[in-house]
Amino acid sequence: MLQALLLTAGVAAAYSLPNSNGAPVPLAKKCGPSSSKIVCMHKYASVMPYHFYREPSNGKDPASGNFAQTNVSDPSFAQVAGADIIVYDEAALKILGDKPSVKKMFDIEKKGHEAPVYVPGMEKIFFGEPAAPAPLHQFVIDLNKEPPTLGPHTFDPPIYAPNGATINKGKLYWAQSGGSKTLQGGRLEARPGIVAVDPQTGKSETILNNFYGYYFNQINDLVMDSKGDIWFTDPQYAWFSNLSDTPPRLQPSTYRFRPSTGAVSIVEDTCVQPNGIAISADEKTMYIADSGSINGDVSDSVQARSGVAFNGTTVGRAIYAYDILKGKFLANKRPIYIAQDWIPDGIKVATNGYLVTGAGLGVDVIDPEEGTVVMRIQTDFPVQNLAFAGKDRKQLWMVGVGGVARVTWELEGVKLE
Ligand SMILES: *[C@@H]1O[C@H](CO)[C@@H](O)[C@H](O)[C@H]1NC(C)=O
Ligand SMILES: *[C@@H]1O[C@H](CO)[C@@H](O)[C@H](O)[C@H]1NC(C)=O
Ligand SMILES: *[C@@H]1O[C@H](CO)[C@@H](O)[C@H](O)[C@H]1NC(C)=O
Image (cartoon, rainbow, N blue to C red):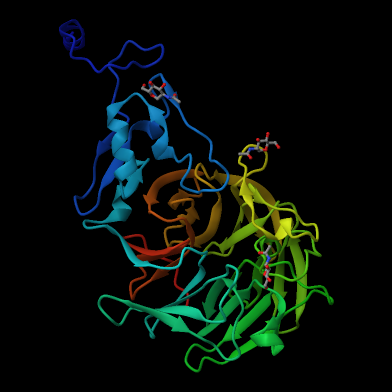
């Protein structure tokens, strides 16, 4: 009745829902604590009023063709672009706590940054810059200072272009992604592999650098299980981004490495470009991001080494879950997520089971039991990898192309130390 009155009075919104007699419900509304700009989407914006249209990405710029840029004739949708956090499932608001904040902490060089790893006790976060020409130093954020500080940090011997990292029993394990024999004017050679580092002394030790004599392609990201086995992804990006002097020799795959014996076992060979990897806290499930929408040319040509393009039309960009069998093998591959912005990159796990993944200009928070995205953090730079940090592990640090940002909330990262 009221609606009919409004309509006749001509004050109804100037847009309409398809095949519906109801008044349009705004797609976006302000919600949650006021410490951040938070918008809640009405039922995942699953019905948009006509006319709407979303441009695909231009293939080069992760900022192009974003969800927020969807052209939709609902004025409430304009709030999406400026939001720090887009909430799709209001039941998940509780993970934000009373005073969530999303803050850009550092502007850094507009190159890729990856492999953040938090060292409890030292209260430091190390991360790397695996982008050509890659430096032989990494970076360290000192959380003992307020505000935290950022500076370069070199290990001994240096690590070349690390793209993933984890910590176990106080030691750091870096996924070295680049391969070159002309580092330091030819005095240093490095190959994709795994490098263990004592963060207290800075001394590093290569614990894997080949597969029966072949160079790995890249070694992108890794996790360690409680037995001490390291599971790592080996896509081909080092070649496409000129971080390797040798074209790929191996099919993109995921492996399990046992440092105590040196054995490397293949566990997955169906992803187009396996990228981020994470293990559930109960070690029953492995998660692998396939960033195959970003691919390149494996030929030995200059063109092949000049970058990659995004094409979401032909190849996927999903996170897959797998059952871990006997602590050794992966089975029952199933997609649980597809990035609606760019590709899924690094993945980390929270104590409640949720996953966070860098995807385009932000981070998606995924409930893997439901296969749903419950919310999205928006940043002004492409997020490539993440680390939970702080004494309570309720800070999520995000690193990527040109930036470092931090979310503080109630979502707690799984303990790594
Ligand atoms: C975007 O929306 C406006 C207003 O509804 C419309 O005039 C325009 O044609 C739309 N553009 C596209 C590409 O759909
Ligand atoms: C790749 O890097 C080498 C230095 O390692 C440089 O000489 C070459 O120009 C780069 N190639 C491309 C296509 O950027
Ligand atoms: C993606 O690939 C398809 C098939 O090759 C092609 O038609 C399309 O133009 C590509 N899109 C972009 C943005 O490159």
